[in-house]
Every structure is written in structure tokens, then in C-alpha cells.
Image (cartoon, rainbow, N blue to C red; front, side):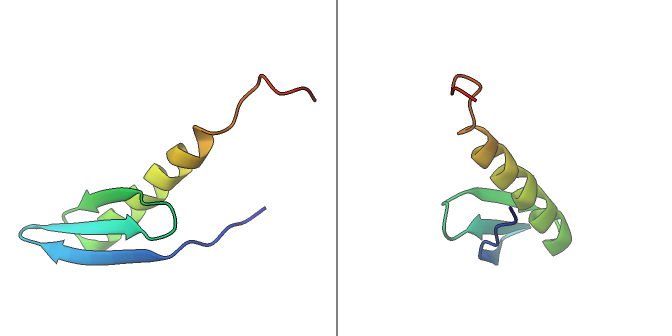
Length: 57
């Protein structure tokens, strides 16, 4: 299942700060593309943290 989230990127001094509006996840990068890539990774890790193997199959 593919989910789409909203990203807002702002420039703060020397860094671009990327925020996922729906999840509240934040990341940064020195370029816009780097901030986007870092945010995707951070969102993936955030979502993965809710997955558990303890549930019955």
C-alpha cells in the first residue's frame, strides 16, 4: 500500500528543513533534494517503528 504525505520545506539559515505535515516528522539537508531524501528516510523509519512481530499472523 502506497501512502502519500505532505512535505513542507523551508530554508533556515544554511539548512533546508523538511517537515511531514501529517506525521510531525522533521529532517534537514544542505540542499532541497537532500532534505527530501532525508525526510523520506525519516518517515519510513517512523512508520516502521510501529510495526511489530508480536502480532499473530
